[in-house]
Image (cartoon, rainbow, N blue to C red; front, side):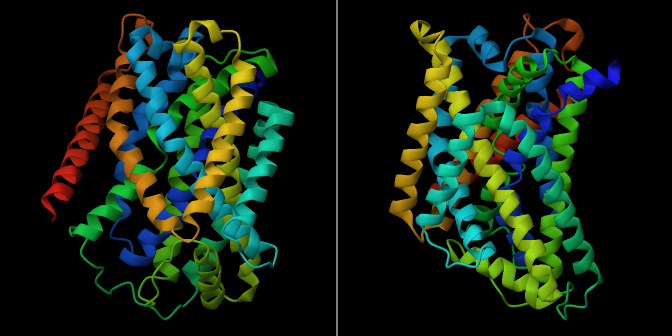
Length: 414
């Protein structure tokens, strides 16, 4: 019975991994390895560790209280919900546009057609929206488990091949300095989406409630913890794998990672040149699965979170979630398409802005999530222990300190 209930609880953590394993992994992690070798491995591991509590608290809170973390936001005060809504809205459009544009570029490469800066992203978004409006959570839950399994298999195959291939490049080459204006900008962007923006921690809480409706079982704190760790550890391991692939295949080659539609072709061709033509379909499939799954989860997660927060901000809309959810999916998709159309080949600049905004917003979400799980309305037995509290404070201080350092360095012009 325990195993059966555990299986009923598995899902939200995997969906969170699907949302996390996207631009941060495919683009940022690979670029980190390609440009800096293994010298930034420490920051990837560190940021995964320091953000860990704030993602874990979301599922912990829902399992312990039977309500979503947005209800916890509401218990803290109306302004916490409004801040969440505004910051989420600010990042949603750019993030959805960015991941769908990368997914569209990879779709063009995978299916053997010329990547198009607008057509393929539009097709990807339309497919995702159709699936969401038709099947909602039930379809998303089933599809993501298959996609994450395929992704993990494909990336492991690619890593093993890269590790055994004599690519001719040298890892002993000194990487460029990171503590420069350009390096710090890249570092902030990398950490902003690594393993994911903290605001998406609310998604797993909302997905837990959908999972409860689908299975009739409310996950215990232990079951939610297992589900969360499956997803989070998977995302962290794959971040290391993508960085390693970039380091093993691209570092020292003289190649630099591009943005926009050219990224997909360059990403796949570098692997093909280094490992042989047989690897092309593996890399293309792994990359496309990564970005399609991210687009799919973003087109559910952002509208779901926006709709749920609007439900609580405007009391008259309390019973209108389905209508708000459908409306926000359509609106965010149309606005994202407009952004894609406007930026075209400037995807790299747009992604940098989105990642930096996510990093600058991270301390705010981190503090609110910590306040919720340490508040009086959180059951005492399920509040974080000394180790988690210490890690939380380290994470909040790091995120706030680095954000302040970045802002000062930008204003100082250094």
